[in-house]
Image 1 (spheres, one colour):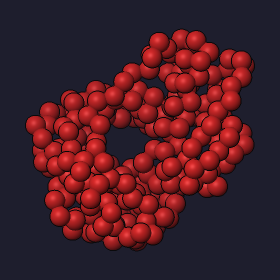
Image 2 (image 1 turned 45 degrees about the horizontal axis):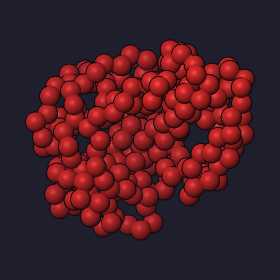
Image 3 (image 1 turned 120 degrees about the vertical axis):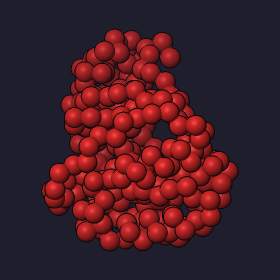
Length: 234
């Protein structure tokens, strides 16, 4: 496994790397040369490591001509978010991430992702939170980005208060995102510290991302409304 990219030094390069763990877990033994270009900050609540692992499962399933069901069985052993990343389609996660429900197609819109550069481990956030979890929010169709944004705000994030207690700059990030012209909503992603805002278009999101502090990691672009399933022939 070779590592490069702006965040290569922030992730393990040996057997603890999720990409290498995913390759080992497939159990084929045929071998492969893998390169991980790490563009997303680690421990940032946007599933970067999980998507890396899922990408490794997909590419090795094709390379080694394996049954995709093997990768689907391996995914939950690598992390709670890996099954959803492996599916690569909009879905609602239940349980510990092992129960995936389909959701209606997402509307075309823009999204800004922002992280203050402070890693925040999910385990710490869950340990710090108190009280019961909210009732599951039923997925429904969204005619446009505004409708999706309204549901995101109504659903909330049960981990947000605990995450802000551990990393107060998250609150500043939410305020900055909400203040961006054209922002339809702003919310924390996963367990933090990354936050996001929705916009009517990808162009608007790219423009607004550039207005955030240079010291932050930020990205703006289109929210992909679809995706693709694992397919050994893809």
